Length: 116
Image (cartoon, rainbow, N blue to C red; front, side, top):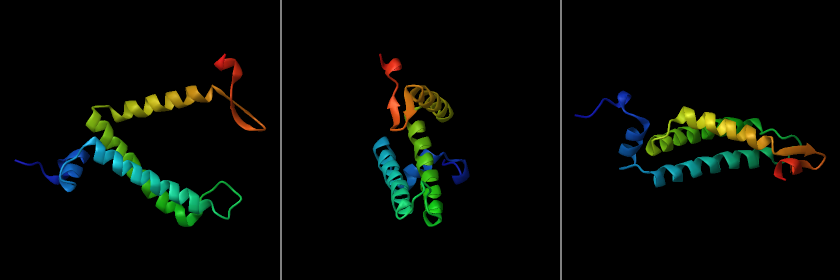
């Protein structure tokens, strides 16, 4: 007996819609969504002097980012990884990497003392 649609996981729903689910399909969709974000940033920043995406592309970028995060959740589920824990670990690693850079007039540069 199948569960009602509202009780099915994202993986189950995507698997039914795409006639099977796997990491390869999930990663393919993730790349597609990342491409949408890149497109919004590229075209949204054309002819602008500020580092802010034009409002026309802002909504599209928001939707693409939400879709990408959903696919990341599905990938985590397929890999048996706790998504919340993956986010915490990623944030910790990001902050650790920031400590390895110094910001000067030339932009971020590796911190020589930390790399020695």
